[in-house]
Length: 454
Ligand code: TYD
Ligand code: MG
Image (cartoon, rainbow, N blue to C red; front, top):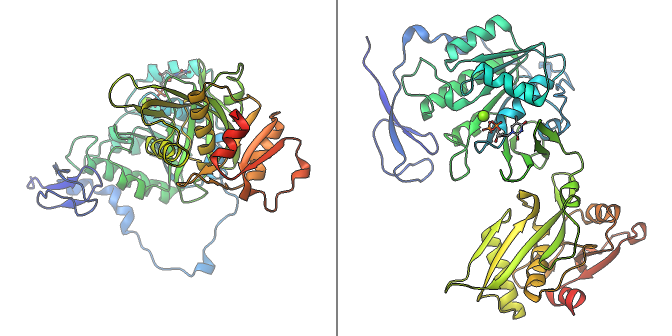
C-alpha cells in the first residue's frame, strides 16, 4: 500500500496547493481551501496511457479536416446555440438550477437525434425513472442505451462495448474515478472525471454532453475549472414558475456566444419556441398601467418583451426595490436618473419590476421600456398596447441608440404595433420608407413623457 496523498483545493476555482492557505492566489477568495485525498493507484493509470502515445508536430498545411462535419441534433434550438450542430469530439457542459429541465432536455435530444447511437449515463436516476420520463415526453429510440452508474471505469467499459456516437453524462458531480480517493462531487473528482471524458472525446471524436449542477449564487458547482476544460458551456435558465426556458451559450469554441435557444416546458416535455415573440403575444390583452413593451434582440433574433412595474408609497421606512429578470443595480440606476435628472419623486416609493414570462434580459435596449413602465405605474396612466420601446438610457437621462434598430423596428412592424420609440441618434442611415409603423425619435426622458402622458 502506498501512502495516502492529500492536497488542498480551492472549492471556488480549483487551484491546488500542498498546504492550507487562507486566501486563494488563483481567484482571490477567502477560506475556500479544503483537503482532498488524491492518492493515485499505479495499476489504474490506464486512462492516462493515451497521453503517452507517440506524437509529433505536424505542418498546419498537412492537417486534414472535413468541412461541415457537424452533426444535426434534430433540435433546431440546440443546433442554433451550438453554432450549427454538434462538432465531433466536443465536450459540452450544460449547467442549470435543479429542476429547470436539464435531464429532460438531454433525454429528449438522446431520443430524438437521428441515425446516432447514444449512451445516456445517469448517476441520479434509476432506469425506471428514465423510462417513465421517456414515456412522458412520448419519444422512443432504438439506438439509445441507458446506463445507471457513477464509476468512470464502469462507464468506459460500457462505452467500449457499445461504441456510442454520442454520450450524455447526468451529472458530472455524481461521477467518480477510482484513480482518486476523494468523494464524488469534490473538486479533484470533478476535475479528473471531466479530464477522462475530455481525453475520450478528443481521441475518438465522440461528442460528450456533461450536465452540471449550479450553486446557490448561480455559478456552476466546482466549475471555473470545468469551464476552462470544456469546449462549450451552455446555461439552461428560466423561472421555475413559468414555462419558458432559455438555453444560453456562455462559452463556445465553435460558434458565437450571443445565440440562444428558447423552449417551453410542457406536460409532455420541452417544446421548441421558434418564434420568441409569442411569449409576449400570449399575455397581451387589456390596457393596464405599469406595463410597457420592449423590442429587444436576444442572440440574432428580435423578441418583444413586456416589462411590468408597480410603484407604490413605501409601507415601511426604507423603500424597497426589487426586480425579476432585470438587474436590480441597473433598476436602481434608472430610478436615480428619474429622480435626479427629471425630478420624479421616486425615492420614497416602493418599486417592483418584473419581466413577463420569467425570462432574464441582458439587452440594454430594454431600459426605455423599464422607465416608461415605472412612469406609467407612478402616473397610473396606461401605455397603449400598440406602443413599444427600444433604447438605452444613459446616466444623464439621455436616450441612447441601440444596435440593429432596423431589425427591432421590422419585428414590431410585423407584429402590428402602431408606434415604436427609439433614440434620435438611431435615425442616421435608417430607411423609414419600408416600415408602416410610426417611428418616434426622442433624445431625453421628458420628450417620451410628454408623448405618453402629456
Ligand atoms: P428535470 O429535467 O428533472 O430537471 P433537472 O435535470 O434540471 O434537475 O426537470 C424536472 C422538472 O420538469 C420537474 O419539475 C417536472 C418538469 N417536467 C415537466 O413539466 N414536463 C415534462 O414533460 C417533464 C419530463 C418534466
Ligand atoms: Mg436532472
